[in-house]
Length: 191
Image (cartoon, rainbow, N blue to C red; front, top):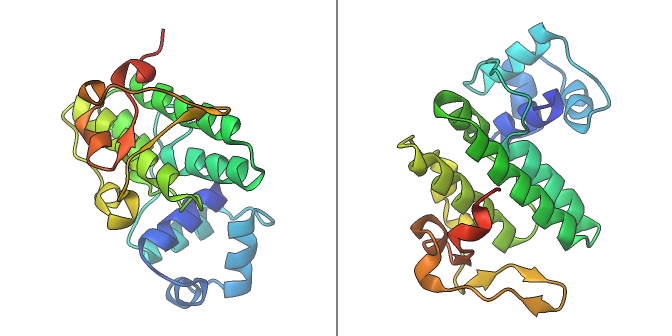
């Protein structure tokens, strides 16, 4: 996870404004803004101060795979560019990243809350995927996955171009059904 994603994700999860985080950490809000936009790379000491002010700490995990917060940003960028095919590829990449790791590494890839993508069904799909992959290994599921904003009122399924991908509800994992996202387990299997 990049420093900008880590700081922004931690600040949002703590429900802090940039101004409040700046005051708590002793880092000017203008510097914080530059860090969150990627225009300034913080020192490790600055990063640790910012995270401590959100009640978090910096931990290194032994993987190069992108985490849920990073993939969430990639999905948001793809959607902002009206590229739903790329958004789907990023989603599948997160699935593969989580499936490839185990235990604490899998959990670490899922713990940081992704910022809203701007599209409710993608936010629900991300929460469902993290819930599904963590429960698969008996790992605790982060609270962010249970936020009401991460569930749909109506069911939604992924589409390929103009065609909606047919889904058998009996094959949809409960973690997705609970959020109104229709994707069958076979789609989540990498070969």
